Image 1 (cartoon, rainbow, N blue to C red):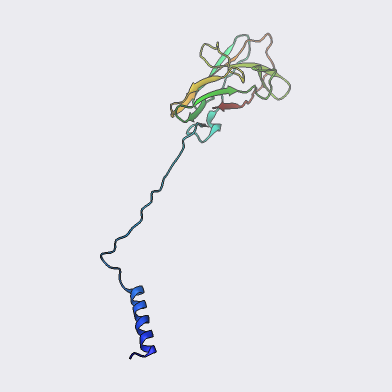
Image 2 (image 1 turned 180 degrees about the vertical axis):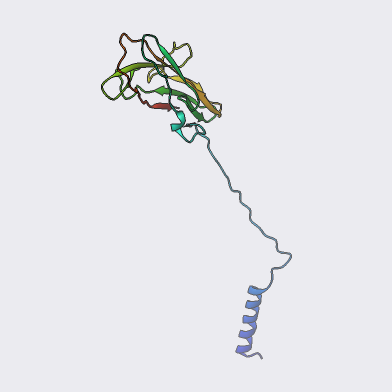
Length: 178
């Protein structure tokens, strides 16, 4: 007859053996589940050269003149006044040019010398300066995903009188809607 201690030791040994014994080679159960990864591309745009620096639009410089008896044309190019941006492929967008800090009405823009003197200027979407570019008359396009440059065509119309000498400036907002 086995003693109670011996039976307990044998049962303990069997239990420990079951816990610490290496897995049997014949046992190969497994469970597999899939993991899904997603990304959604949505319409979007970013402004500036390389899409990082809207200040890189630069300045449209109409140059120097002593008289405004003739219209003066200027054109904004990449880094010098053009609108530069990148939109996701297939994104339809519009670009509106604000009226500036010295507006007389929609599309009526003025540069100032800061001393109460003003010079009118107009902005256009085309080189013939026939399509005005304002908050109401916007440029519309569909993106191909690459960086796009939209030249801004400017004109200082001739004036009956020329204002005093000085540096005349204005600043406006560019709004891209998509």
